[in-house]
Image (cartoon, rainbow, N blue to C red; front, side):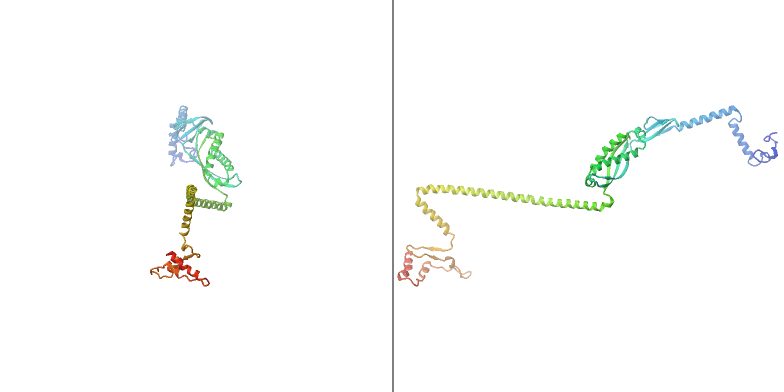
Length: 376
């Protein structure tokens, strides 16, 4: 009788698992029941049942294999598919299926703008060192080239950017790089970098290149800061000088214009006066030729009038008198008190008071009296 039949006893009173009493101890009955149910589920030792179990296992594996083949591509992505490692196509947004373990795919975001920083020390055209920091913004333009053409697209982009930066900085002077030439350098780097990437077939499109910083090396930064401050002072003084010049130059030009106008007016006045004098001289000349004595006398009188009219002395020249007497009219008003009425002096009485000469004859002493009578 078998040990597992009712009433049967295993050899030595123990079952094959080392339990006594024919496996009737606690927990033994549950294990036997579980084994019996498992055998009944899979057909026990029936060959037909084993085939059915294998069929179910295969169907389950196929279902799982099929389920693992579904994948989703987002709107901003594209999927590059491969079959046994060979390119087969590009899938756009949506739900797709591929046979697992046979086909594979790689998703690539073609709409996101990515950024890559780059810091490098370059030598300029005038043999100076500068530390340049830039930022590159790019997109994936061709997923196939981006995935297959180069092993590491980001590393290729970094090396190409450094090469383009070195070429542009090496063709520029340090002062331009540190001051006003940053925008121009960025504009020169972008097309050169894009040309390098197109040559490498990296599938990357450069959107923008920004120069973040361009600084001299740390060891000489203080000296460069002094140079920059000196240039700023120069620009400030230059602006002040231009402001001063803008205020002085118009004033000087106005003064020059005024002096020129005055000179032209004086020139015209002199010319007109000369022409008038010449015309008057011609008229007098014609009159002189007709009546020379009258014109000569008139000219003499006019000349004496103009000359003696400015004198402050009165000359009296009696007819037939030998000495020339003068009346000091400018001295007559001196010595009077302020506000007093001026003293009226009779010229004839002053002539009578003229003393006679100490050594002259009676005839000479009597001459002033006769001159006075003649004047009366």
